[in-house]
Image (cartoon, rainbow, N blue to C red):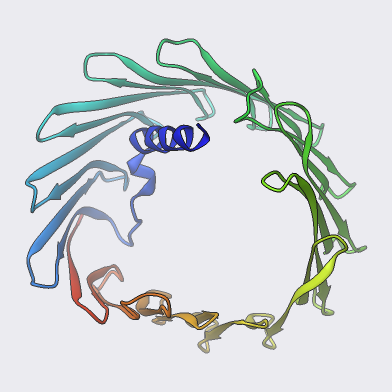
Length: 360
């Protein structure tokens, strides 16, 4: 039952997702982008087209599956404050599929959201209330028939720190949270309770006099074993406040499981993290811009090379457990530093993506 609920939830999130917020950002005043993907035989597979207004907001996004001859279109409408108020999703096969409408308060905070089909059948609606800090006080999630699914209620202290989050009505899929803070407004305790009020997780945070996190201790209910399992992480700092060592403990009694050491250059930039089976490195140019990053975990390695503007020009992943083995991506950029060519290769094949970018 739990897995079925998860699948349904993922589907709802997928169809209600604001595509405008998930699209990549670009440099310069982009008017439109056409992105074409090719397979290993140089055959077109997908074409993405995006159009932007003078304010840089996307107003149209079209995804075409060339092989299946199916196009999905998203259009976006904004208010005078540039807040998204309507999104329409349609298909070349079925016409309009979904419409979402959003309303905002005078501070630009979203106060209502409605998702419905072309025939005006409501699929989902949400209502939000905020406090003076602009943080959510109440979030109401309504079912398709406008009956209450659940209400999330948040409480805050006089400094704006959230001290509790409760779901009403309680169900096996909703949890309750409580938080405590110190005089610096740093969290010192976090608790999670299940719908029956049983403590599932408790985390304690300890800081030094400068407010640096010294340790985190957690006890969580391993429900699949029916037992409580403690865990602890301890940090050691240098005189500049950088973490130079992290020790992780697990089990009852707590047993040291891993130690990670962190190294920095004279400017305080992290240059490496070394653990038993993991090594991460960062390299910078004379301007302090990251030009190389690598991460190797249990012989599975990835590395990224950047240009002097911080743009990725090459990255690779080496998977020991995958028949594809080494996977690489190389990029070429235009004069505005937006990539226009991406070539992906593995042991089996090569793929290419071409962008044509029009600027205002």
